[in-house]
Image (cartoon, rainbow, N blue to C red; front, top):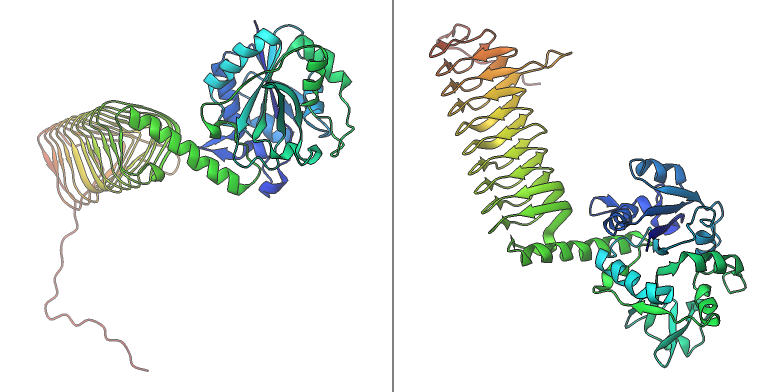
Length: 454
């Protein structure tokens, strides 16, 4: 049976107090709506219909790369009205999962379970049992069968004692949506068209309402303000940390760990506190990440140790590499096995060969560095002439002296040496020494200027 996903994403999110639409607020480095769309893609929905309203241009631009059918809800007249505006494009066959763009953490397994139970009856919902159900629509049951969903403002005192609530996640036969939605009324305390009213229509048709509950309560938590967003962030991060620890990752303190993307790991990976991982990253066996590192779209091979407060972006590291502390690898940095990149060293769009070292205060940009080469402290590749970038090529077993400026384009040969304090502007042949410095001048008995007293 074909599955359509309908996502309600038209709300303004006034309580966010932001110019950014609520569904674009970030959770774990991705917009709230982005999480819902990714889950919809995982269940292999035949089509995804997203209802936009406030800030619609921003929302559509943010997901221009996605295969989404957009439908505008010009007036926000309730959840029932939101789904109703999709009827001109909603298929008449199959089922629709109805999701909310501000409920980002619902799992693929939960939605698949909902589809499975709903296909038997034509309608199903996700419910949740809470100790405090204040503010939520209540699930009214008789003989354990759902008889109604009553919104909090419309509920009687007795109904407000019910702990089981409606999460707003539905799976409904498309044929029934085409039949029921045009019949919705706004005769209620809010003056809105409630999607929950289709439950009464289903019961009137003699249809039993199927239901499931999520494995994890936070899956169905919505976001209305910054406080809820921050709380859900920590719940989601704790869940991700738990899954990694179950795979054998040693996370020193899960409450101080952030995964804003996907991480693939080997055995015995160790991650210290306040590490942020973004995008798609891979850590091999026995990788160690020190405190305060930020690592994005990076592959780190087995046995590599990253010292604290290092920053990587689109880098590739080989085995048994030593990095940091306070190192920066920018896009295009490729380090071979056993490379050492030390404190305050920056590497950009450069390859560093097996066993080579740059241990202190260096900048390596647009460079190719060979095997077992040493880069002295304070050395930079002068790769930019103000208009274009140029390449520096350094051979195997070279020794680049302290405080060198290598003015690209330039090639330094195998086994070559450059003297400390040199500005190297010409190619250096294999196994040769190059240095450049002004003559030192000394003045004996020199008297330094004295401060004039006023």
